[in-house]
Each structure stands twice: as C-alpha cells, then as structure tokens.
Amino acid sequence: MVTSVDADAEQPPKPDVLTDERFHGLTRLAQRHFGVTCAILMQHHNGQPSLRASSGTPPPAHLQGPQCHALITDENGQALGEFILLGRNQLHPGEQQLLEDLVHLAAAALQAEQRETALKHELHALRESQDRLALAIDNSGTGVWDRDVLHNQIHYSPGWKALLGYEAHELTPNLSDSYNRVHPDDLPFVQATIQAHFQQRTSAYEVEHRIRCKDGSYKWINSRGKVVARDADGNPLRMIGTSTDITERKRLEADLQIHASIDFLTQLPNRRHFMQQLVGQQHNACVLMLDLDHFKHINDRWGHATGDLALKHFANILSGQLRKTDVAGRIGGEEFAVLLRETHRRDACVFAVRLQEKLAVTPLMHGGQVIGLTVSIGVSDLREGDEGAEAAMGRSDRALYRAKASGRNRVVAE
Image (cartoon, rainbow, N blue to C red):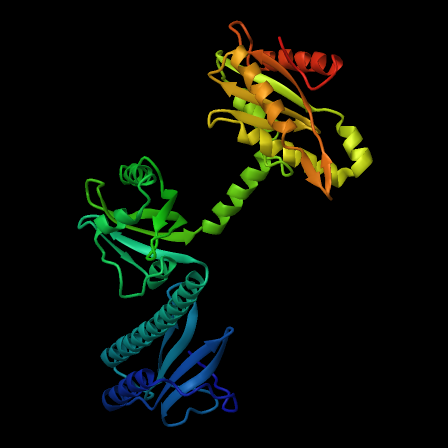
C-alpha cells in the first residue's frame, strides 16, 4: 500500500495521554525488533484523513517500502482512522507476519480507546440529561418515589418531600408511615390499585388521592408508577413512580362543577341539576312549582337590578324553609321548583302556605322602600304508575297555572 501525507495539512489537536502512550510505546517496540523507520497515526474527519501523530524518521513525499496497515473503526464499522508502519526494504516472512500482528494489535487498542472515549461522552451526556430532568421535576411540583416491595420501604426525593412541606432529611422510608399519610377515605382505593398492578392486571399504576401534609392539611396528588423489577415468579421487587400536586386542578374542577349545577344569582340548583334530583325518585314525595307574582311589574318599576334582588330575597326565604332532604331549584326567570321527599300532598300544601306567610312578613327592603312579594304555588305528589317524577312536575305546573288564574298568591294542589 502507498499512502501520501500532506505535510502542510492542519495539525489536529494534541492527542490525549492514553493515545500518546499507546502509540509511542508500540512504535518503539516496532522500531527495536523490526527496524520500523516510521509509524503514522491517521484520523479521519468527514471521510478525509489527517495526520494525528507520527514517530520516527519523517516519511518521504511518497511512502515506499514494506508497510503494515490497519483501519480503526467504531462499533458500526465506520472508519475512524488508520495505523501505518513503514519498515526496512527487506523483511523475513516471519518478521512480516509479526509486524502485521503488531499493527493490528495497535489498531485494536486504539479502537478500544475510541469506544471508551465515546462511552465517556455518552455517560457525560446522560448525567447532564439527568441533571436537566431533576431540575425540571423540582420546578414542576412533582416528586419521585422508589419503593422496595420486598422490604416494605419507600424512598422519596427531596422534591417529593417538599410537596408536603418536609425537609430533605425528614420522613421515614417505612411503608406503613406512607399509608398513614393517605386520606382514610382514599386508602382502600389506593391499595387496591397498587395490588392490581402488582398482580399484572394493569400495565401501570395511576391514582388521584388526598395526602396529609406536614402541617396537617391535605393535598390532592396524582401518583403514577410502574414495577421495574420482578423475581422469577413474577412477584414485584421494585416500583418507581412520581407524584404531582393537582390540588389547584381539583379546586378548579370543583368550582366548574358548582357553576355547572348552581344558578349564579340565587345560589340554588339550576334547572338541569334539579331535574337530575328527580331521576329515580319514588312515590311518597311531592313536587311544587312556584312563581313570583307580578315580577314584570317589579322590573318595570324599580329596574332589573331590583328584580335580581327580589329573586335572591325569595331564594333565601325558600332555602330557610327546607329540610336537609329537600331540594329547591330555580327553573328559569321568576319560576322555582321544590322536591319534598317523604312528604304527603297535604303536608306539602302546609309547607306552601307557611312559605307564603313567611314571605308576607319579610318584604324586600330596598332604597328605603318596602317591596312586598307574593308567590303562587302548584302542588302534586308522586304516584304509582308515574313514568318518572316529571309526571308529578307536569301536574304541579298545571296547578300553578290555576293558582295564578284564580287571583295569584294561592296554593292549588292536583
């Protein structure tokens, strides 16, 4: 093989100590025993060779004479460089073979070094990635836990402990202590979900539950994990996971649920939520339909703001007359409905009259003026054969129409 070297080529960075020792040590061995005049270590960049190191007599412009050559490749077979030895003009066959073995040994050693260096770079990159991940986790309201299933212990990252207000040195790894922090109402579900994953009935563990903080308050967390080691029989040995603070999300969900079921003005259940309360309701209950009398006159005379005050005033009085088992709702405009559970129609009529009397002695006071309110009420009970509570609601609505037609501020039952 004949190889040319550009003497003016830009010199690569100085080789590291390990490469320098291996290269020059092998070169001295070759020079002493085989009369090698020059050893060359090439390094390939973008497919082009460049001189990395040389030892011995500088090579002529055109290399001549017996040579030994070996490629240095990466794990994928990609050429990283070349190792070349130039010897005397005459070598015995045995010497030639030994020299060939030497150069391949040198190439293998340098190739191993290349891979070792690449591995170091990968490890460094992995550490950097882990550091970035740890930083991201610390700033995301998420903590990491690592459970030793065999010994009933669980270890927490400092970020996990900080979620609950603990310092890094606080909290024991005892699993029993961990379960004591879970809200008692959530603990059975948490344990059942973990067991389902242990028994490989689920691919991962995920549950939302409340957990007690250091100050005694509770937070909502989303806990996710997975078994990462099992024994030969499939029994879990180790489980790793994360916990994320979702308290704010839970609060927002609760607020949205309230807004979806509550009438904003009166704070009573809205029509949709009231109708849901009727679903599955059996007989021995009554439904009342209520309508504020002459409500349009209030809006026309005092304005819609005063009309809103009248609706809120009536809703407060109505709520004050209800038992815990009763439900009242604003159906729309100035119309309301009430479900009285475990109540006969006669008792429902007594309730309606009592509500009218309370409203009569509790007028709306606004701007130094007394605004009297009255209400018309229709009453009906749930009966066997009704196809749902809506049937009773329809009857009470017809009774309400008759109450208003007969002069208002009346109670009519059907």
